[in-house]
Length: 195
Image 1 (cartoon, rainbow, N blue to C red):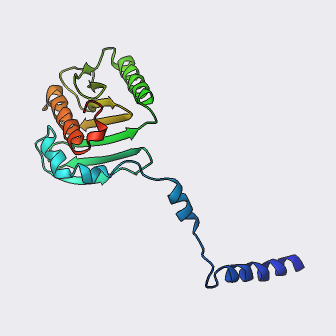
Image 2 (spheres, helix red, strand yellow):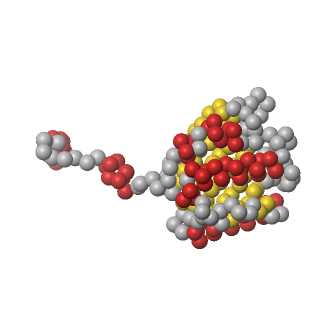
Image 3 (cartoon, rainbow, N blue to C red):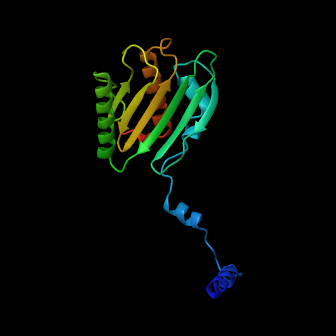
């Protein structure tokens, strides 16, 4: 019981002394934030909703722009477009790997997974990063959840579309995804390994 009373009186006393003027106190979250620095950018600012909507294949105005949680080596943004008959969406993200090799390995693994699922090769996109492919659905002419994956140096860029499976062709979605990546390369040239 005496230990309890000592603890109850000593701990508050130590806290009060440590907060006296002249003593600098650094909260734990400041120490954590100084260790983890964001190495990329805010995707929703670099690629604003109106611009992504104008480049998208949906021909619809932007409804909602939602940033992904920012992590070291990752940035992304989710775009919902206005529609009465579907839920068109665009997801744009960049992953930064420690090396070109690691980004390329990620590209190969995702490609192999897709080939195992659909039993065909994705569409190769020339002259875009180091490697680029468009990943559709079972029917090569149509896609709902589909998108473009690009390995470019140590960066892995992804543009994904959802919506209008039978109204907007996979080719139109592929062309729009390529335009979005080229616009991102224009704004952030260091992402483009071919510059």
